[in-house]
Image (cartoon, rainbow, N blue to C red; front, side):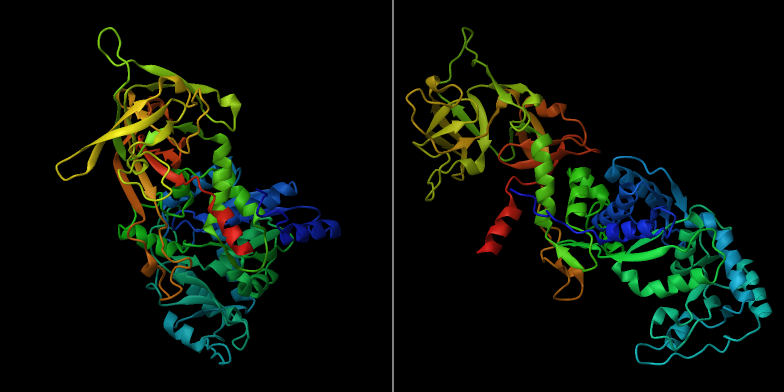
Length: 564
């Protein structure tokens, strides 16, 4: 299959090339990835990581990981550690420069005093609800605060007392003095500082006033020497304010240039950290690293290769048009990567006992044990082969047998011959049932002349089944997954994405049996369970295997349907 994203666009690279050609930043290229440490990174952040770090790498520049840590109420050192870890995993290397907006608190405050002294900012004594109401709306004029023209000396005194902790939370704020009639609502005297007591994960209780995003972001870019501030499209309306703030200040470098690109949205997925936090706090999932979560930590635990996510982000293109990618396309990249790297193993998830009545015994009356050499990965001969034990006591998947087969059922049924992968041809002869009439054992015979699964007379069989030798099996647990959200666009019908949660998004199987070598799988290693899919050995609970993706190429099926 050809690459489904061949010819992907990247308008940001075109902008950087033009800037370099014109000498706007003296040939420098510097970007930043600025997450807020109020949750774990998700698949949407992967796009921003790819764009920011990828742009810097492409032009021999630098990208910093900068924490936008200006809200002590929601931020935590746990999230900082997780973001550093997940960014390093996705990139394949640890970020060279890790910085924090809190590193610049003193400079940001000094610039705030500068704005006051120049008559471009004032302290407002009104509460947040009143300020919000006075802003008006689109087509509705704004109302100037009664404190808008208070003397600079008075505002400066109040700001210093705010910093000193003299006033309660929410009682005052610092606002920029721009234009209360501006069409762009962000220019209607935005709040720059608010009083917010709380323990900050880095500065402790040193500060009780914190800069807003719009005051901290552009100035942090300027302090660091960022050339291209790459943001998602929801910040496009903030850009005039971003530019206004920078234009009022004595900057140490050229003024950064903000450019917006479309964020990454995927079907059957949400990327709102607030709602993801709700899933965690309400116990709907087992934490931020639950393998059902779209967090990078959850995707890693489920077995998604970092390289597949990077390729998906890069090859779907960088545009200014918001769109929603199919989750099957992401799985296509995951499956393509794992097909080349994952070793094959035979595992039976729902065992049904299979006894070969004519299997030989040795001189002591014990069943003979035979070994077969099986390729670890047919796509990679360098992975070599493994020896798999075979006896007359096996297990197969329950779904691979039908006492009364439906039409076009080519697997095992009474009188039908099938191939056991790499071993022999067998024919079912009888069944054993429990008191409720359920089949609990299949009796069969094998053809001793069909070693390797090929009949000497050249007869054909239509089905090849995997199996596990019971005396040599190791128990494993498996987690099977469906979509976490049933709707392709969660919340589209009700405006609440959590209404579309899938109550059956995970099935835990405790009685699976695997060939012995599966016990040697490293934590985090992904194996292909033959005929079943790709499964990742859990990093915290080795022996619990998460199904990463199935073997079926769903994206190819979608393309075929679309072409009809």
